[in-house]
Amino acid sequence: MEQDGPSSIPAGSTQTVPQEKPPIVPTDFRARNFWLGVTNGIIFNASSAFLNANTILPLFVARLTDSRFLVGTASALHEVGWFLPQLFVAAATAHRERQKPFYIRAAFFRLAVFIALLASFFFSSYQKPEQVLFFFFLFYGLYSIGGGFAGVAFMEIVSKTVPPERRGSFWGLRMSVGGLMAAAFGSLVAQILDNNPFPRNYEILFLFAFFFIFAGLFSFAWVKEPILPNLLPKVPYRQRLQEAFSLLKTDPHFFRLYCTRLLIGTYTVAAPFYVLFGRFELGFPVGFAGLFVSAEVLGLAVSNLWWSAFSNRGRDGLVLVGSATLAVFAPVWALLCGWLGFGPYLFALIFFALGATNSGLAVGYLNHLLKISPESSRTLYIGLLHTLLFPILFFPGLGGLILQNLSYLALFSFALVVALAGAFLAWRIFRMQQKVSKV
Image 1 (spheres, rainbow, N blue to C red):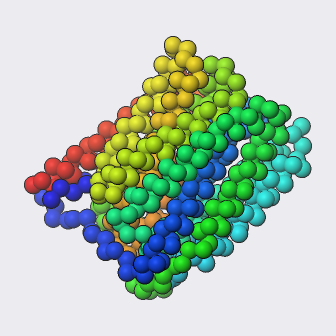
Image 2: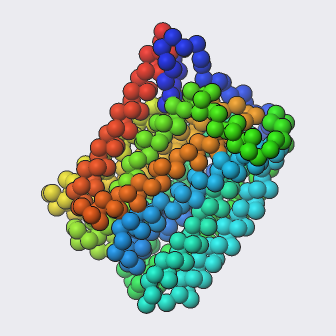
Image 3: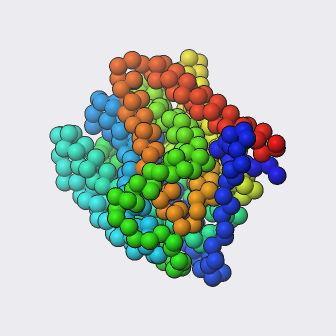
């Protein structure tokens, strides 16, 4: 039987990917949680129209500073907060039968710091941009860290209540419907940016984002978490961390998934700078950021029609290969737009490709991670993988340094090289696994 996934199995090895047992959960829990989780994702993805890391945040920070390093760091801030704390949270909560209380506490924390962020915008003096930047990085960073604390609980609840054969549809509906909503909001974003002076235009966008974030967190709070037996006993915190890190040696499937996801994720090195290239080098008006937001979330939504279909059939490895290949398109098209002087509508294809790449990565690696992780230690698997992906988080900042010290040509060329390397590795791993599975 042909196996599919982003990890390869060495020739001669008798190891197989562990087959996940469907969780024994009451049917009404499954249906209720499935649709509450989908609703949560739709709302959060819709909010990305107002808080997009590849368009809105880079443009906002670029108005406050000439440092392209800070622009790149701002773009990565959400991912930094999401990924880094998860291992430490998982080590502290892996023995708990219920994870929902941690999600609720993190939700209240995130709402509180986002309100503080909005307040800092309204009461800070934009005559002192360093003050605005300080509060932005402080409060948005804390908001993102709160997401990391909630992430482990969220993934554990999803794994308990959404059976493997429906997870492709679960992630696909979240991204597709939410993406279509965000795409529809693109014209609203353009009007807000064009018809309001700085900084009011960005303050309005952040305020819209807050209302969607509140609704998204509130919707998932109604999830019914089943209490399932957890086989991990309570042990000292340090011992739990050692158990987590040992997975890199004891589980080759996990190690290969990590390496593949890490390299593919380097496509973000140039992601926040395409919008600045269009704005400052090609001369597009700021309102076209709305078009780029729509293109990105439309790419996310449309691509999920095929990503989720492949994932539902257990072909998560092919999803990763496809998203890695799409990551090559953005720097190539950016270089062509610069040389041939393409207009904003053709330039928007870059953002469509970014959205499709991002959604393919999310669907492919998340579903495969849930598939290979044993139920008793799934929390550790989730936390370890996400925390060890931290090198990716520095790539947008690295891209900013390349841009500030060299040029857009150097940055996009570097992005092309790392994207090609990621696509090559993903394809090699996928093909190696296919050959071994046929032996």
